[in-house]
Length: 148
Image 1: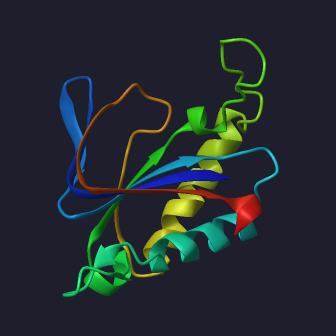
Image 2: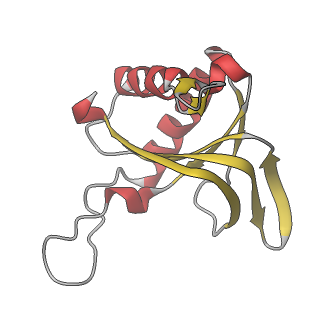
């Protein structure tokens, strides 16, 4: 699993010109699910994201997590994070899990994030989305399940 976590002051997902979901202060989580990912992978990634200290304290140090601050999570499935760009100029997406299985795991991932006390909104799986984010910082962190 490959994830990009972006600290945001707000975020919005639209599909077909209509707002699908939106959050205020929190994090946008882009999740790429790979064929070898399992339930345990989802749990470990959700724990890491929930407890990742990327919000400043009074001294400007990254000290608080999204859970500590009761901020929101905008979780968006993003198979392009699994791109292999080693050969040529066109990315290969063979490292992404096939859509039906990936959708099931993504839904489980969202449920796990919610079970950890996060307020989660989602993108629209498999749809073309217009995503608007007001990045805060910017603070962007990449996470890979193989490196947790």
